[in-house]
Length: 271
Image (cartoon, rainbow, N blue to C red):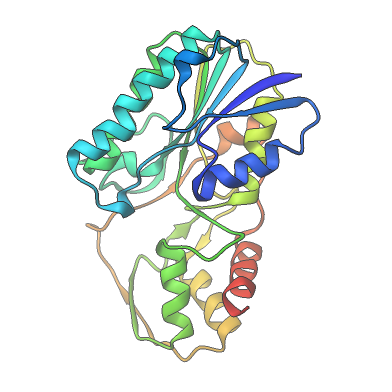
């Protein structure tokens, strides 16, 4: 049995990670929130799954981002040392890359003007990578699935459902910046069950396939029977890239097809 601590089991991502890990007979799951009192706990654990974060969608103050994304990372690294954690699995963000406009980004791509949220996520990464505790850091784009939410994909689908006029950028470029919550929780479960000798790995997650954004929008229109008119605006200045997920695939990551994900979201949206 591996003793896995989940920080935090609340919220959209954390709750579904909790649901998935509780199904594993080889995992003994423990929950840790911002209100927990680690000083009262003397147990040792094997893995820390660190999913808690204040995202850019919250539009919080600088103090709040630093406290919740950076100071919390310091606290969780200290917790990991005190409880002999053997590996940290940290959920980071592809927003770290900032305003890049390029075809494909990899783990080695340099950031360009990241926003405040992204800067604090990067600092949290550095705190973990410099801790000498083995780690998996996952840089993740928009997460979707199981319930209706708020991000680019949800907004786009809602506007198409309403037959709105849409002005979009880069319709002829490839898109894979989407992660299904089931694929994410399955991969985290795989990482929890895997013993690697390496001290740490930084991996990008996205979809394992990529399709033209224009084709994706056309597919959405077909699902809704939408009359939305789409205007393609060409620009080299808007943030845009696809994610090289080859390293994650080597570690067992798999994903649903993009159109399958969209069809499932459409079903949720229409119910």
